[in-house]
Image (tube, rainbow, N blue to C red; front, side):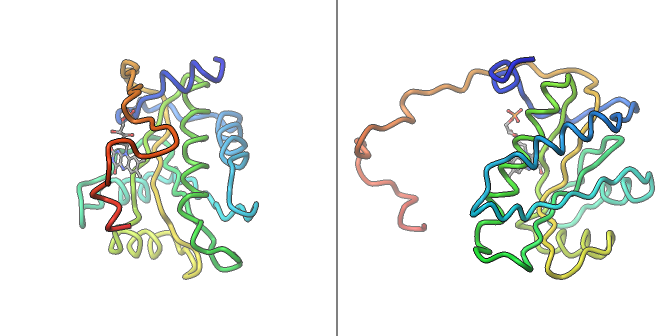
Length: 180
Ligand SMILES: Cc1cc2nc3c(=O)[nH]c(=O)nc-3n(C[C@H](O)[C@H](O)[C@H](O)COP(=O)(O)O)c2cc1C
């Protein structure tokens, strides 16, 4: 599958068959993740593949602060190792770029996935940190379920030229800007 096809057909997949990803497929997905743009080339991302059924189900059943997670044969907990970072404030953007690459790689392989947030839910972050023995300087920020889709959601076209401005914000002040 070529790049634009993957970009324009990717949707979040939340139901998976029992078939696990092969090691080759996982490697391609992590190669894509680690090819992402990132601040100062600090590459803070770390990935924990959770395929132990008991651990996977514990994460899947996590029901504090928001609803449980969708599970697949392999969950990937995406973490940021912020201990050695010079520009610590960029870890969220860096890991987000990596996750998007993971999801596009999965799509290109005929697989599917969904980004599920841990951050900004503090209790969830602490729970997963304790469950997976993650050190205090590492921030688990998302649970990405990856697998073979039961059904592939239809592509959607969200292109909206009204969301693109040129040179100035033509419609005047933005109410959100006061909060930024
Ligand atoms: C930061 C972030 C957090 C998300 N958290 C969840 C989540 O907790 N559970 C979930 O099912 N989907 C989650 N998603 C997926 C979005 O719901 C989904 O991408 C959005 O509805 C657009 O649909 P699409 O991915 O099918 O195009 C998240 C996506 C992002 C970028």
